[in-house]
Image (cartoon, rainbow, N blue to C red; front, top):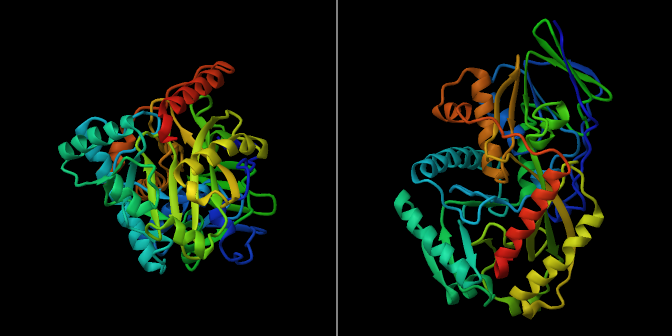
Length: 448
């Protein structure tokens, strides 16, 4: 019997212009699917998961044809709006602490580093600069006694895992960031920082030498008959026996996991390029990345290179079951970002924010991914639980390996995860999630 999937109208939903994308040179002209194709493999989604899935397929099935579709320009979506930390250690943004059970955290770290090694080889093969892919580590910055205590507890946890870290005092933090706001910091050396939009755009450009990539080509219908999936876009179609869905929360738009996925928006602001005098006044190192000691605090990045010296602030969580946010939602976060910025950088009071944007995360209530064969010949690599760069990369790799019959113990880890827990009905889900997020942000205090 033919299998038919009703696909909702997939809209962008992410408000504002991402500064990561805006400071890049104009992209090459887009290739829109305007014909009927056949292929051995189809990957839907051009973010971290989709690009990684396509590259892994290329490695495993180099003689087979691969098509990748994205509904918008690659780099404009959620992957290009990320704060840009490819984190190796466990990182639970739904908790007020990053530490978990030791054995499970060790296993997650091994998984994440499998993804990072894959990304590092990608960066090498495609000639990414250090500005785009920088294995510089990550600092957990503490702005309060409570945050400092979180970091000290985390050191104990990392020691139990056999992981190295470097403690930074207030003067170390000022030397690095130019700010005297932080009481302490904890450097973990194996995180990679990326220029989010440049990374996925460069990844797609490198991949396009061997993979047929089509942008602005949203899926509007899917149907399987006689062992072949036919996927329609507004102007064309792709027919393939195996399809990998790498659409994160939009898995729901394809009719799967209804009332089991949580859609959270996070917001960011990026300054204009700093003047020579402002760079001098700030001091510190040319580029760095500080994540908050409390997961509900502010992530801060200082970047330099294409687009000049700039600072990025990221905070404020917003639950939205419709997967849609607006510029009005951004305006509600402006005061949060400006206040957080001025707390840290009072010497830069005239440095304005040039770009403000939001990006969507997908979480499950019980913190598990959506992975595996969800229909005959249809595989999912979705729900990254707020750690999109590393977990998205990992799930894309593993989905390609699983669909190809490649043996990997990490695949078993993912297949053995529970299903996402069902959410309460609306409006209870929104009311409950909003109250929880507001409470956690209030508890973050000065870390925000």
